[in-house]
Length: 417
Picture (cartoon, one colour):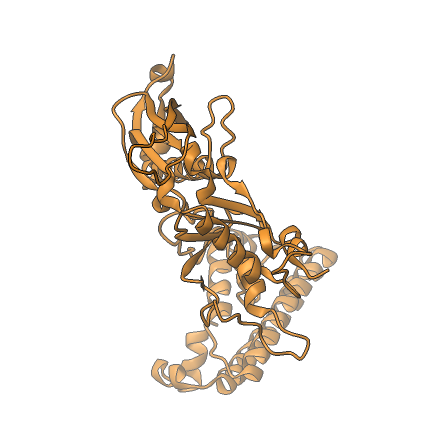
């Protein structure tokens, strides 16, 4: 008996069946299974007379278990308030169609066996029912770059361009004689000095990246990312060279190489103006004085961010914050000189200076070229080259425009004995 015939015998229409809840549907299917079981049992008794009892029993037990399994699924649906999907009816129909010829042979020959496999419904889980990238990931556009410090030195200096590969200048050296007041008819004092030619040579900073044509074509914005990477690293190297290049080999001679060391002068321990409980602000104030008495006007103080933070949070023994009268409320300006924070300065060190006396001249600004090298063309490799040519100098007569030191040593040099 088909399930539809069973419904007809119960005088239940398709529309009424669709409106039933899980409990009602479960009850109907139980009744339907009971009828099938009775008919199967009767057929079994008749069938086993002409067939091997052991084989028939195995087949009957398998079909009975399938029916019981389906009943358990219906019970679960009833318990959870779900809707019956007709999986049992579908599975049974497919089983009958699949074994149609075997059933005909069973009817005609009155012997043999037919196996039905009725699969129970399973809960669907992502972990067990999904393979591959389902659901599909949503990828953010672009490439998240490595975070590096910002270049800062060149923008503080006296910059320009140069047409030659050598930058020359003339400095006055070794003056002799003094100007004095003289009486009428008396000999006038003689003065003289030397003129010394000095120079600095243009240096090149460069780097390249080699990538396949496929990589540049297939990865969105890859060429722009490579250009940005080269630009960033070239500018950082220029920044480092102008600040701290040692002048050897192809290195520039940087500001720190020419800057003079901190000298406490009359503020040193044991001197007239020695300082009690000297702090970082005291060191900077004395360094400013050192530059000014050398007849320069400092315009920037360079510090590591951690040292600036240390000044912000420093407190006296009673817990109040320390804020010298020559510092602004946020500790970003000392005696009118702004503090520039950057990790390019070593933590614990500082540089105070008149940065107009640091000169940078570019023979060639930053350029990016694309081309082939050796057998790159036949291998589909492309070379992206970035380079810049520049020169830096601080004139020897201007060395005293820059003072550098480390806070720990210089505070100790000023501390009251």
